[in-house]
Length: 326
Image (tube, rainbow, N blue to C red):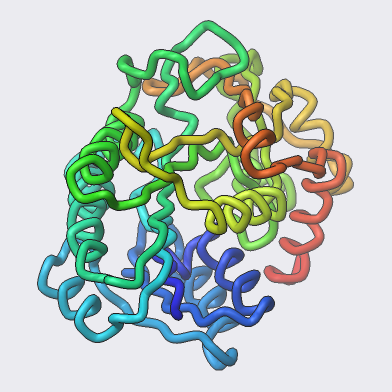
């Protein structure tokens, strides 16, 4: 049996592929290697995977129905799909909204259509986002909270994916699980994320923009904890119940909301130098705070994040120094 991992050259997809290969699984990775951020980093991640026993890779656009159809025909032994490929970034969705509809909404539909052909498929896991909670004031965010007022197009596409997945689960009995990730960070991370760009600017002596004048909080989740959560979810596909399709949604977060000031302080200590801070207003489409209620994930999968930012951020900085020769 083969596990399909989309976005395999991306941050989370790369780490998941490594973990699956380490335990002896066959992995088919797909990615379009787009230039939203430096493709050289994606190529470097991919280079870590290629040549490993059990790994195969195909470069395709998941919104391309013919390409995905051909993939489905060529690989009838797919047993699990972990769909992590997406157009990420809240702010970029204001600049290029069409990319989000193609990469997030259309790709989900195309891949779910392909999944209907895989007779051996037992579970389709896909990435959602904490962004779907929008400007909710109730803290922490629970899966049952209202999510009908997204404040960015990125969040709207992720909520659309959740709704479409409920429909496919109901129509075709396709077992689907959506995972709302909360600010994932760690080695090999995304350069558009604050922890990455802050580290780069700190080492280069450049200013960092502190949005909303520092009055922000985030639930930072270390990559190893996220991978442990994903693999636990993969092993337990949802089961249809009376009046309820086989589709569930869970939060995967650290269950701790950190202030932006403390986050920067830990990063400065890890880098061994102070940041030059420029205070800036809240960005359009951003939210004040994220904080995950992970009770359901703990109950159903034994999900227990273990890594505090005091441990995780220095690990990232150590990787950054080694990878970029700082």
